[in-house]
Image: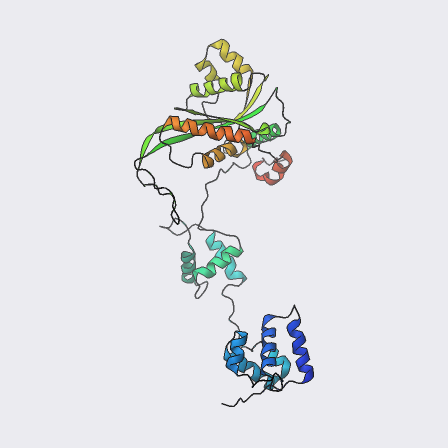
Amino acid sequence: MNKIYLVDLTESERSRLTALIKRGTTPAYRIRNAQILLNADITADDGGPPKTDAAIASYLHCHAKTVSNVRKRFVEQGLEGALGRKPRDTPPTPPIFDGEKEARLITLACSTPPAGRSRWTLQLLADTLIELRIVEGVSASTVCRVLKKNELRPHLCQSWVIPPEENGEFVARMEDLIDLYQRPSNPKVPVICMDEQPLQLIKEVRLPLSMAPNRPVRYDYEYQRNGTANAFLFTEPLNGWRRVSIRERKTRRDWATEIRTLLVEDYPEAERVILVCDNLNIHTQGALYEAFPPEEAAALRKRLEIHPTPKHGSWLNIAEIELSAFTRQCLNRRIGDLETLRVETKHWETNRNVRQKEVEWQFTTAEARVKLKRLYPQIKMK
């Protein structure tokens, strides 16, 4: 079939198209259209027969209809019309969400989910938008794009320690601990943080299958509960030291025994030890008198200065950071007996102490008074 629209380029048009192809900032569609015109030029002297639309399309990796359309636009609209995009036959589809509808979606995602549902899902949000006639139709993926743009994730729920607002006792203890963490290292008066964690001893009933190519380690879903234990963790953040003790129980006597080990064995040369711990009822100096004779308890008490964290303020205890690392690095598996747990814990403690992993506390009182302003009581002047 003879071509209806023939491309006959002038010398200046050919030079312009050649220069356009070599330019690095030209849009890809203009480069493609320029290459189509140069290859379809009937006056081009390349020593061979004229190229067909199919041959040009195969060479440029496009559709033959695209080549035909570019030739047609060149004849009807000139060079600039051929280099541009094909005009739309219909106006572009308006976006589903304008500013008002997007705001209503955000409000819905931040609200309480309907009765019988624990959380909002993307499909539930899409269905609710249609039911409320906010939009005529929308897919879950479109809802996802809007929420992602606004950094909202209604499908997630996170457990958090929420401090009380306008609470003088909370901010007093918070600032006390922040001031402690700003002190330089002092071997005579070290600052020690302690925390504890209950543990379950989980025993395997069947041997796990070892890892193989394209297959991870496999554990049987069945297990045997083999009792409980408790980990007492002490750490001196400025010197990169920590000690983890595994005990069968968590009683006042157990805590008092750990405190004696801290004062007598870990820091025998210290005049006084500042201890940061939470408000658990066993963390009192009275526990020393319940575990030891009065003379020994009094000697320990005089060297111990307790600074408790505020209620709902456990994040102020640096020992929680160490306890989190201990849980992830050592306890994230099944350990079936107390002796194995103690051996594995000792290996973790030794390795971490050799590396002297420190915690650099950088949160200051000045920052707390700005970022946590809602926690401070509002003084009303008379």
